[in-house]
Amino acid sequence: MGHVGEVSDRSGPVTATAGVPLHRQLFLVLHDEIARGALLPGDPLPTEQSLGEQFGVSRITVRRALADLAEQGYIERRHGVGSFVRQHDPGREAASGGTYLDELRQVQFETDVDVVELGVEAVPPAIGARLGRDGDMLHVLRVRRERRTREPLMVTDAWLPADLAGVVTAEALAGAALYDLLADAGVVIERMDHEFTAEVAGPRAARLLDTAIGSALLRVNRVAHADGHAHHYLSITLSPNRSRVLISQPGENFTVAHDVSRRD
Image (spheres, rainbow, N blue to C red):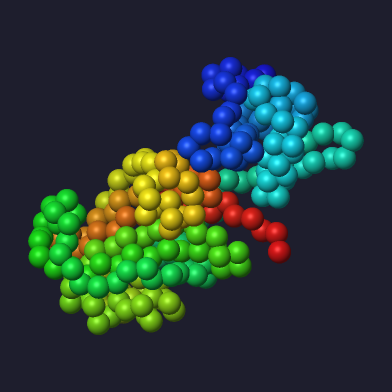
C-alpha cells in the first residue's frame, strides 16, 4: 500500500517522543490515513511485517496499534488473511443537527467530573485582558474522566463572574453541566470565540491528565459572550493520545471525541 509508505517516507520511523507510546503513534498515523481517505473501505492494510519495517517498530507494537483500530471500528482483522479498512463515518461523533449544548450534555452523560479548585480569586492579567475586566472572578478547575475507567480525558479551567459563586458550586457541577447551570441562572450565551493552540505538558497538566511532562497537548481557549460583552473565559486542555476536536459545517460547531478503551 503506497499511501502508508508515503507517510513513512515523510515522517521516518516513529519514536517514543513526547511521552506518546509507539503503538499509539502508529495508531494515529493509520487513523489519519483512513480518516482523510487515503485508505478506503475494503482496502487491505500492509502486513504486520511490512508495517514494522516501514515504521521501525516491533511486531508487538504493530499488533497493538491494529487492535486499537479494530476496537474502534476502523478496520476488520481477518485471521490468516490480514486487516481491511471498514466503512466508518468519522463525522458521526460530531454534531449532526444537535446543538452545541446537546453535545455538552452528551459528554456530561458519558463522563464524571472532579472539581479540583473552586473559589473567588484575582483573575490573571492575560485572561482579564481577554475579558476586558480585572479584579476578582470565580475560578473553576475541573478534570473530566471516562465514567467506567476513570481515565482523565480533559481539564477545563474557567473564569466566571464572581456573582455566580452561589450558583456554580462543586455540588451543582457534580450533577449538571456548567452551561446548564449558567442557563438556569439566566445567562444567555450569544456567541463563543475559540482559539486552538498546541503546547507541551507542564507538571500540573501532566499530573491532571496522567501523562508525561513534555507530552504534546491541545488547548482550546474560549471566550463566551452574553449581553453584548465578554462574559467568561474557559480553556479545555486535551491529550491528543485520547481526544480529538471535530469541527462540523455549516455553523463551524465543534465537539470533542474521546478515543478511550471500551474493554470491560
